[in-house]
Amino acid sequence: MTVRVVLADDQPLVRSGLRVLMADHPDLEIVGEAATGVAAVQLVTDLSPDVVVMDIRMPGMDGIEATRRIAAGPATARVLVLTTFDEDEHVYGALRAGASGFVVKDMALDDILTAIRVVAAGDALIAPSVTRRLIADFAARPAAAPVRPARPVEGITEREREVLTLVGRGRSNTEIAEDLFITVATAKSHVSRLLTKLGARDRVQLVITAYETGLVTLPR
Image 1 (spheres, rainbow, N blue to C red):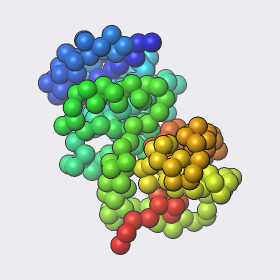
Image 2 (cartoon, helix red, strand yellow):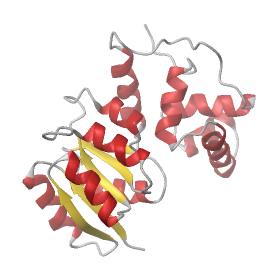
Image 3 (tube, one colour):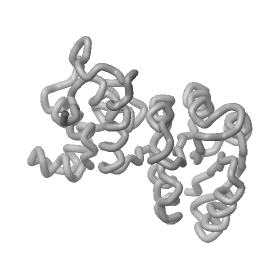
Image 4 (cartoon, helix red, strand yellow):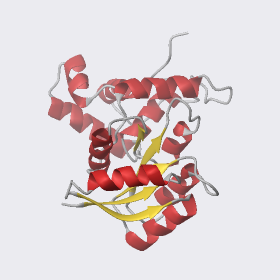
């Protein structure tokens, strides 16, 4: 299967680098390029790509708003945010807008291509170390959501609550299985049920839910 990709970045050099690299990978095809959020949204409508590699800081409509419109629309395209995490304060907003993960621009290009494949397959790409940094960054903001929820997460079992907590801490399915002494297949099944029960788009939204409901807290 070929993954059809739209590149949305106002830096021609970034798009050029990815274009050159993808040329050597027949399973990845660039079907369109955009330098603005408006153009990215239009390309998704016109081309129905599998993945949009989305920069956040673009002129006019930024990547967060573009992601929100894509996620809310009828298209099935998934958004992989491409940003400089240490400098960009809007990563959390992009994930909440519906992005399925993010990569940083100083990663190896091969790792970015792997991320595209992961997102295209319906999973979310959010490395454990980055998950913790993302949550820490969000928690440090004055306008952050309260740590204590107004009500607990409802409709999930105690085991699913344990799994959700571990997902929120950035644990992979393999690590969850090791922590709970279950098989990887069972851990994956629990995650799938959580996605369904909580109406989450992907694993990234489970991380956000775990934090916002107080299942995951940060050391003081």
